[in-house]
Length: 150
Image (cartoon, rainbow, N blue to C red; front, side):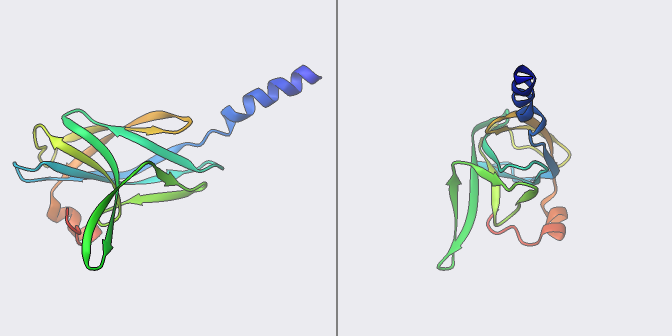
């Protein structure tokens, strides 16, 4: 009986693993001389525990950072984040003027219609690669509002 309970306890964490759903990912098309782009999406956590995005990676960029845009004293600035927190049974919206994934050091600026494979790394969960479409800025402005510096 004890070994059965031990075996059940060992498998419990596997069944309790959260699943992160990525909803409506996109990157705005940038001008040819762009040095950085931002990726936006909604991250939905169906699990009972908080999930942390700890890192991201995509080909064609020098550096990828997790950021949050804030406005302080009328000035817009971006603050690098160690992690993005997705609440248990909740979601985190990455949007212009808020949290986002910063793609820095653009090798070849993507155009509308291109797709960027973006890998998201999670603490305690497997990484997930998301196909992020590049969309025309004007098209996304209608859906999300002002870009706040992006």
